[in-house]
Image (cartoon, rainbow, N blue to C red):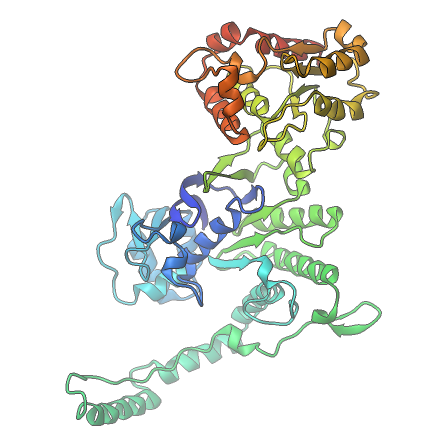
Length: 538
């Protein structure tokens, strides 16, 4: 059983987000964009309010008037139910599902201690007796490995340490298969839960005796009972630790960060192998890994991705957030990539398609053109507004054209100062590349103040200009070239008064709403530049 869709409302910086999930899910974005908020929203769905937190900590900016909601749709629900080991719980869940292979589950701030189930479009009106226990047994096992867990005693067994989480998953499966362990659990249940158990009868008598004395002070007291919870697996291995001999045998917690992460990688690999070789692998696992690349060499990162892809190929599902291009660069049929961006303090999630991917890789590599995988051609533009506009226009109207990489010439999005020198700086690393006679530079029409620098640039790259590789906008800025539609086109003074953030926001809107006819007719200098880039492309 896996997550097929997630919908989140009003969880910290996430106003409203809904997206489909695959076997292997990657989230990329700048720091403080909201990636961790997404992971913690899922953690709240599974585990409720974190220890030491209150619901007020989860509301956006503490605004408790907004209802927090996390809805998760699960697929292959019948497979999940049939994989349950507890027969009584399995019977309950199969009865509730009533043949449906999907179910929608919601936790909201209106009733944070409960989760609502919707099956076949109808909300489950009332949970049957013992349902909560059965439902928790039915859900995939949620494992959230966040950066805060590293690195103190990371390899010591604990329910909250990364190594403990991974290793216990394997050991728990082994124990579940062991007939002596199963006999122990059955005997424990018989001893403490069976109605005919002498121990339970004595507990009930003790509870009745205590109730008699208690009701003398509190007349409303009608019952006191004592229960013994089944021993949890984590309780059985509290003293479990890992030792590693790499020339010096010590506890893994005493090794360096790199060794600890490598150990975790090896344990995940062992877990993946163990699960892969089993026909009845039990319930599925959901792995949410925060910054999975920490302290790993790029080669180890690629190995980790391969392990996680193997892990997610069958029962399990993986979600990672990352700043590493290694996790993003390679394509895989079972992976889905989302870019997380924050605008006006609200986190937005956007699916990264084939056209977006080179720009995501470019950003993760730190924006160095020399690090990019080779596209068919390069277009160097003044700033991020051109990138936002043109990527959207190309996706909408020209997906069949040669793939090109559009590079912002280091325009400052905050100060919005487009600089010819920035174009030169971005252009120089590629002067002697195979793209020397291919790439195109798009410049703003120079102002009188910038004319001198512009002329110097044109003289320095006269050969490029003679070959038609330098294009100039009809106006002094992109915003002055927009069609005279709605409030798109701006005057020179209006552009001067705009912040970089306002310009990129306008570029996104124009790119999403402009028609092909408007673009080709009203923004002819920009359109002809694209035609030139495509014509010169490899």
